[in-house]
Length: 133
Image (cartoon, rainbow, N blue to C red; front, side, top):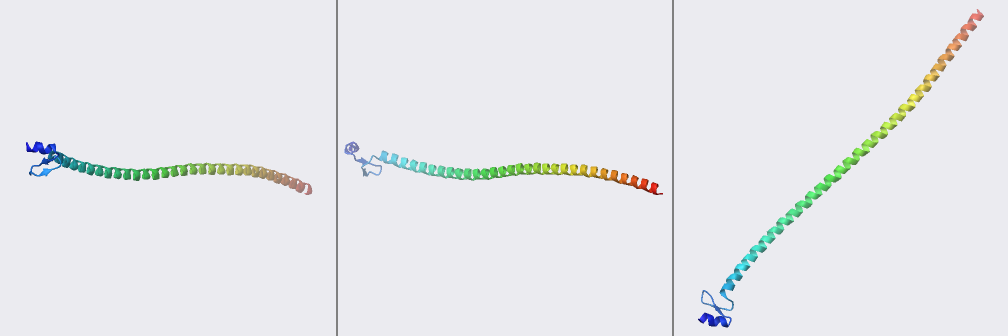
């Protein structure tokens, strides 16, 4: 009864028989809510740490992937350039072979011509030596 009269004036009596301005059940509920909020905040902070770690590791991994990508592009370009260089070298060698073949044909024709001239001169020398004898 006394408790009801006091509650009409906004006063309450707790378990220790002390007069309070706030209902003891609400104080208990508030304390529980405060504890739950603290636990929630701790959980959120722990979650933030986990997410930050995940982001950091993801960024590290993306940097490694980028480095590997650039290396593969470099290797691909080197292969392309070495293939182009080999093709260029092949063309140079083929051109040199053609030049040497042309020179060989020219020298063969010259050699045959010189042999023919030598034969003709030998024949003339024989004819002259036969006439002189």
